[in-house]
Figure: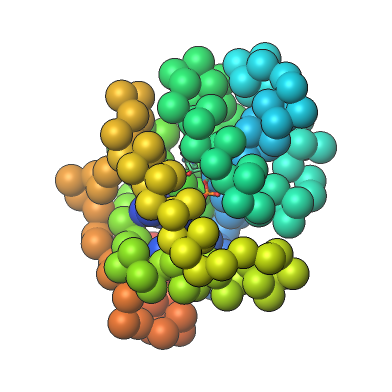
Length: 202
Ligand code: C5P
């Protein structure tokens, strides 16, 4: 079975967890597209130009995903992600991944709208600001980061605002996306709903 699943939504809504579980369930490949922007962001923190970094990104840049999942890198990612040239440099890789034989799940902000407008299944995953901040805070503290809930909430709010307001490929639900609000759902229930939706198409 070859099918593309596009999963978009704001930070810490549960996209990654759902995308991984759907990919595993159906045997599809999974790409966390946020890692691409985070890798570019990290290279800019090291003093490199964003466009050059995006144009020369390699697998090595995203190899250590955990090192990219920090609040500093997330902020840098959302800044470089507003640059059209940076986004343009990452389009071909994402589209090629989406066409993989055997099926692919991509999660991000613009997958259903810009990268894969023809995806067979589109989900837009949301949760309230408070729920998302608490989830991300727990996750970061669990990894040993010293951050307060307020700092995490501020980081998410700033990124969401920037991601939704940018001119190029702003974060928005595709008209044909299924909205999945995970605020009051357990992980298992959210995953089950996503799998059910993909299963209808498969
Ligand atoms: O999903 P994650 O929080 O890892 O993404 C980090 C940042 O990368 C987002 O805040 C957003 O600015 C950017 N991004 C994007 N388009 C995507 C995926 C991520 O602009 N498809």
